[in-house]
Image (cartoon, rainbow, N blue to C red; front, side):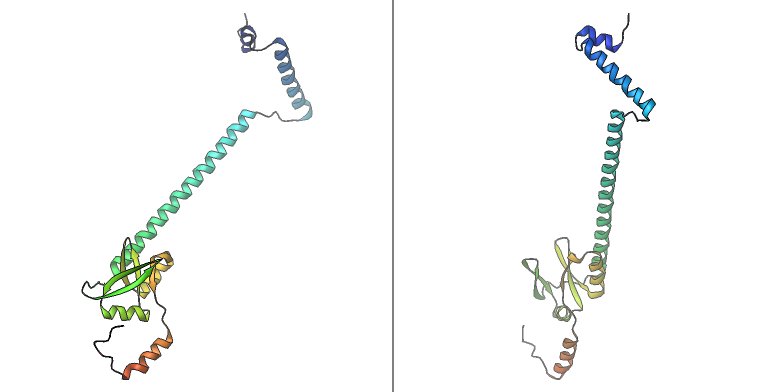
Length: 180
């Protein structure tokens, strides 16, 4: 009593004798061609396994790259936070309101008149840390801009003309009650 898969399929009526002979002949022909013609026998299950393996490797590589980029962004963010916290200038709640734009919104911080003057001359900048705005020196702002340009909100350009104008108006006294 043969208990092969072929016999079981025949007994169950799932295949006919003609189909069994046809499959046997096709397999014999493949083997014969492989022996005589040097043709490789294509194993579809091996190809599918190889394809699945390559897809998994590509997926893992992409996921690893995403995790690496996320870790780099987190490290840069931590560096920027540290730079701002170590170099920020104090705000003055009783000081003058300084209005500036952040995207399409107009924001306001209260700082001293001296800091406002330094901002207008381009020696200080305003950066965003979380949902707060901080005033920092220009060299620190340049370091932050190297890491993430979008964090610098206000950066006025230094001009030689403003330096020359300072000297020109140095002889004139500005009244204390004048507000711009």
